[in-house]
Amino acid sequence: MLQALAFQIGNQVSYTELGQLTGLNHETIENYISLLEKAFIIFRLPSFSRNIRNELKKSRKIYFIDNGIRNAVINQFNVPGLRNDMGALWENFMVAERIKYLA
Image: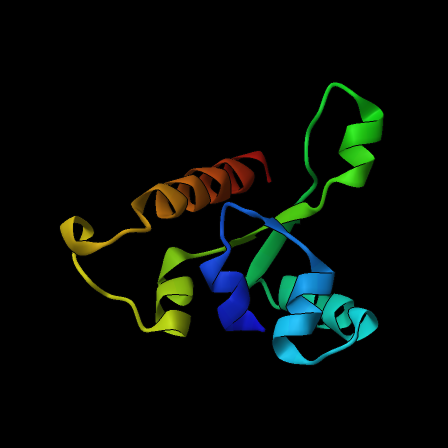
């Protein structure tokens, strides 16, 4: 499940899709994500929309506290020029830094 999350940084995460990928039920997925948050490995952010109905319907985005943990989980240590996930890494970095700043 952690690998699936690592490949989805910057994207909205569906617990149903994670369950299908991992063979775990929705409740177990929620419990694991909660544990990963409490262990300061990931954090969740709700979607933002000016329309509250759309905001409630959308999934959350999940980010890693540290890109190094994310890279280790998927064993991806290539230099930036050889990566196809630089946009997601920058988004994760910027959001994580902003959260640390606000805390």
